[in-house]
Length: 219
Image (cartoon, rainbow, N blue to C red; front, side, top):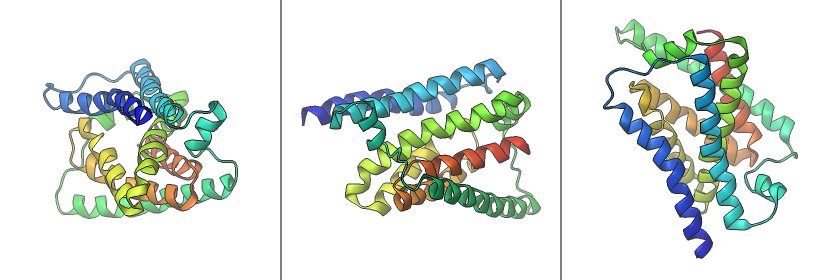
């Protein structure tokens, strides 16, 4: 019980950071200017907050060394290649479906512009083209799938997948676009299924990386 209490206190940090900033962005006039250096720094902070607290919580809950912590966050060698391939194929399939949905909405006259996403794309450099999808996928998959979802799985896999996906979608509230909440939620379902199916963070990581990389490369 003491371990769970301490882990709960630690979790206040990422939850306050993720959703506090998202809510704060709703009351800001416009979005802050995105620069390559600011983008990279924010990615490192995200990794420290989400990935770091996930590791810390697992260490508190289960003990063990660094190897044990990574094992309990589902960094597994077994089936890694199969998991990676499954993740890439899932991301490509989701992107194709998403493109069709966006095309239908745009044909119907609905605007799909996203100012923050456009600013990120404009500030993209070759190193960031790889750094952004790698760091964002690693931090978010460690926190939302490997830690939160797999801890909630004891209440049922559907509940765990849907709840973690909902939290993942709401975390994108700062984009100021309903589509940027709906799409991460839907993609979160795919990532959650990959996590449950493979029991290996490699699958959702590669899916997340592929999705972000293709979007940035073609934006």
